Length: 84
Image 1 (tube, rainbow, N blue to C red):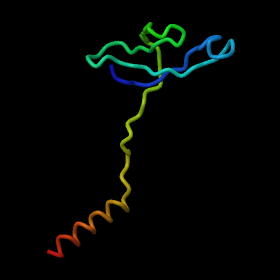
Image 2 (image 1 turned 120 degrees about the vertical axis):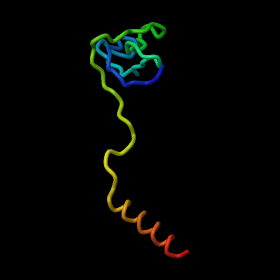
Image 3 (image 1 turned 90 degrees about the horizontal axis):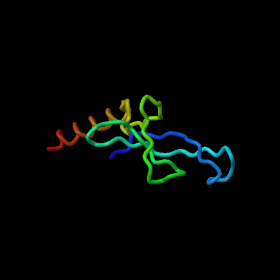
Image 4 (image 1 turned 180 degrees about the vertical axis):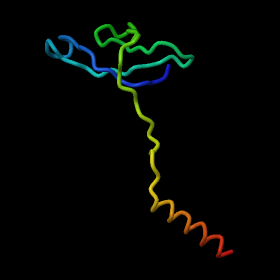
């Protein structure tokens, strides 16, 4: 299984309050399939999310590169090439 995102679900009285909400991780099988999460009230039971939206995690790679850093790296590469 791999992490796909998270979903906010009802936690019940177990988490202190009648309407406590808890954020739980959503997993997807590595071979593909329906996403699921483990219920906070029944930890060993999978709850499948068929046609239920959840928040997907984003990749940590930056979408845009900083032009100043690119120019700095190019200048360093040129100075190293010219020094030899």
